[in-house]
Length: 79
Image (cartoon, rainbow, N blue to C red; front, side):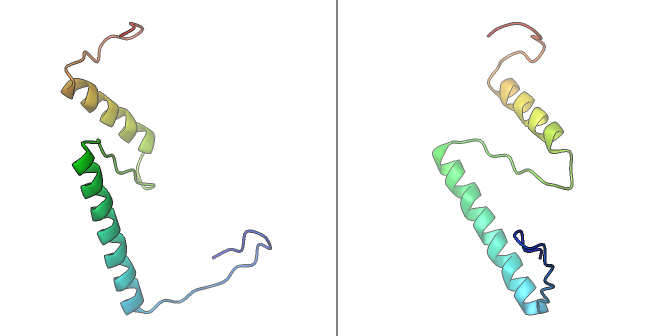
């Protein structure tokens, strides 16, 4: 980790057990978030930093438009 104020780098060594517990807690948190959003009827998009997230957002928006029955080939047209 890098201290944002000083720039000092600190190496943090985690045990395999700590990494496993963190991964499990993170997965549970993502599941709770997904479930809460589904209960409200909100659409949910998970973005990843190892992918082209702009393209992911564009695909998501196009899928939502198609699901709503709106044309996606209305370039320049106003709804």
